[in-house]
Image 1 (cartoon, rainbow, N blue to C red):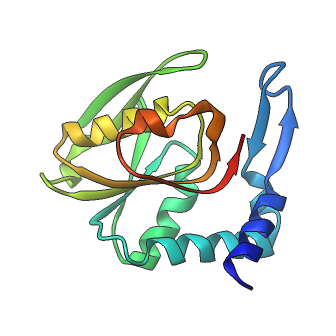
Image 2 (cartoon, helix red, strand yellow):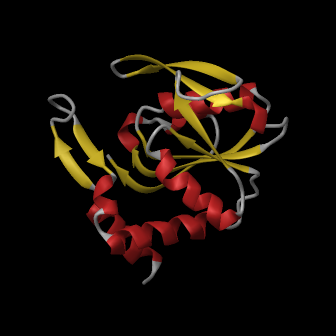
Image 3 (cartoon, one colour):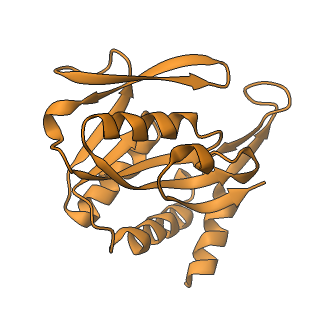
Amino acid sequence: MDKNEKLQLLRNAIRTYPDFPEPGILFRDIFGVFQNIAALRAMRDLIVEHILFLEIDLVIGLDSRGFLFGPMICMELGKPFLPIRKQGKLPGKVMKQDYTLEYGKATFELQTEFIKNGTRALIVDDLLATGGTMAAAVQLLKSVGADVVECLVIIELTTLKGRNKVGVPVYSFVQYD
């Protein structure tokens, strides 16, 4: 199967739910991919083909769907995984970063004992929308001396222009207007 066929299989497996979580929102759900083994394999292949030549030291997964992809990427690259979680979920010494959501505010935390100055990081998540969450993750990593090489997402909602807020390269597999 070539790259275009894999992308189409992936796109077809992403579910769309109108009016969720609020009226007027068109929700793109990655979990349909996990119900379709062929689409899941295609997604894995696409991710692996993209990441193999990235020079990174650490994979960062965003709470919570980034946790689905981060460990898989770590296994392929032989690099460690570290989560960025919502406030109050991580033990040990953590750094915090507040950010704004569409419906309020939130705080991310990162365990700092595993990051050295100059660590090259890849951030992964399922979706890039307005970019606030991803931008907060980038800012948090930079505040502890990491260099964010790329942000990798499966789905990007391009009309929301979230990549413009992130400040580092963004790669997405499936784009929706």
